[in-house]
Image 1: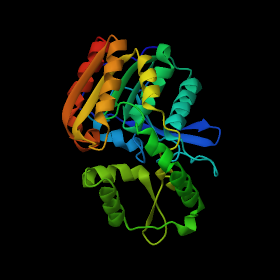
Image 2 (image 1 turned 60 degrees about the vertical axis):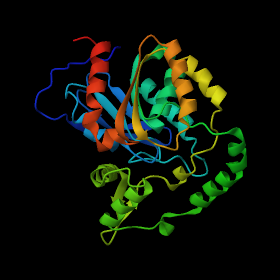
Image 3 (image 1 turned 60 degrees about the horizontal axis):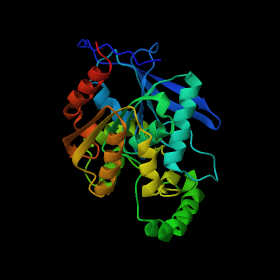
Length: 310
């Protein structure tokens, strides 16, 4: 099944429906934008974000476009991974994505990913090259790449952190007023997110408790995100398998701590193995799609029009 796109856009904004997709330990919550009778682009958010991260972008795209924005397990409104089990965020996401594809019996999958979501899309496109039609990556190419010595040195510390966060019951979790919650999110992103962007994320990222206070909805265990990372050599081997239509949108300066020289090598490898490779740079921070969606819309529309002629 190929993605059907009608690029004739009216002045009306796209609309969505909140849905739940069953999984063995609960459900994946999602926002399904546009028609339900078309196979959607599957949109996957970044680490500790949620499906709302794509709201500003999708509101600028044609309303006839079908897009399924999921909350990964432990994020947004989706079920948390069962107690006692760590998050292996890249691999968890890959399995969840495949579950969703098989649940709906889709083929020729199209993926839009930001950060962690882009890395999951990378793994999917490499693991299922014959079943991936298109991948749009925003400001991340692949799973994070660390020096092996750093991984070995920090593994014990990360396990202990996981056990600590696991021990925190809801009675030990702090609650905050709305304004304080938004301040915390801005501080956590080192002010690279606008206040409006934080408020958009927190529509799904927090829930009310008593006395006009709020809890974060994400699983605290997600803070431990560096277990079972692939080596650089493994990432390169994955990259060799990608043959779908590929668009990379790199924010500049983006996320400055990324090991960009290594990611550039990964991009070069992808370019060698696919017949349709597009790389563009836009001015902005890591969350450029959320802070300044209009700047990336022309690149996405141009890419889609080329793949799916009107």
